Length: 498
Image (cartoon, rainbow, N blue to C red; front, side, top):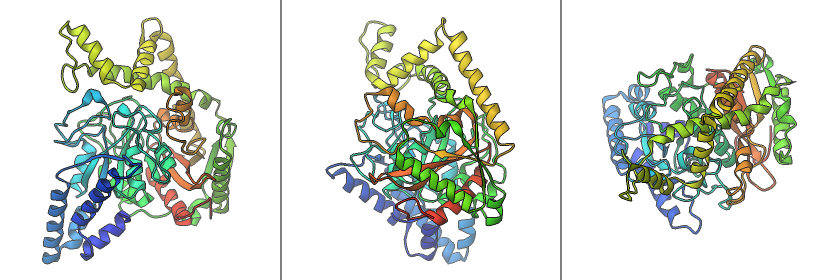
């Protein structure tokens, strides 16, 4: 399915392809891949009504064409007939939702998440659910009850996490775009590892209604696609205040996303960019990643942007702060999975305490258990008044410092990750090393700002490199315009290029 959304729209309107053909091609790719020696394992299943929805979209297009109202139809439903991938923690009514965990085995979502409902209103078709790290806890999509997702660039490597299934599906052209979720980098990281674009939205821009919670004050739905345009249009369709989510908010200037323009030369000459010194001094950064970042910096300078290195000492505490807050919230949120109301149950017949204990022991994987234990430790009577409170204080300081920074600068740039994708199994038994994959991403979630990972060529290993552009809260439009200018100069480059 080697189409962008705009290309597919044009072909659908011209009658050169049908939505059913797009869906069938994805299903065939999925079925063929399952038989391969090293299956990608991006999709866990294709939805059984995707073809029917595609047929309905084709009928709408045919009727509008006969009535001479084709443009009117596509203006009302700009994503009509476009199939997309769904992460396995986002509710699709009547479909299985397991968060890649045994404890939710057999659970069926009773309603659509708001983001799904809004995409369907604009004509898009949910194609299937994608693999992820269990309950979105991980950076490699190896912590899944369904096995790991492989990187489509090299199947010996990880796809990143926790939205690795959605990223791999898009990168392998199994879907035109994909939905992921972010708590500390789970969209941007797999986007970087798989060589595509990944947007983390401002907290509140996309409703969390119908999305299974990991860390409620950090979680946010994000998008994965081959181009900034393919992120902009679905974002336009999904964004905005939602009655069911009190933390939701409207996105200023969202209508500009419907027909995204690239940042102009005049705009670049006024652009002020900050590079945190703390990230430049990070130990363990791959030389290829550093070279790609240097090339990115030069690209901005050649465009006329002013770049300065800034000192933000508080960023040194971002990772520790993130894990204190995220794991505390995870322990609280996951307490509802007890074998009583839904999902997997082990009933030893010895009372509720034994039922809870054995259900959770058998249902949760090792990484989720680890995070629940740490989160409950932080929230315990002896520590909750100190450790958790300190984490929230540091978070408030990070938010304040980033807000202050964006009064003087338009953009922050840094690598998305210190390294490229690593081999399957390399870090799965080393939690601390795995957690450090999020070193450059967690500050964005803590500050509740927006950021995008853009593909910046490949390392000597052949694996993709991602560079991160971060903007202020509700800065999605400008961020995507800058990314579109980047894409115009870099699309198809195998190495950092102009």
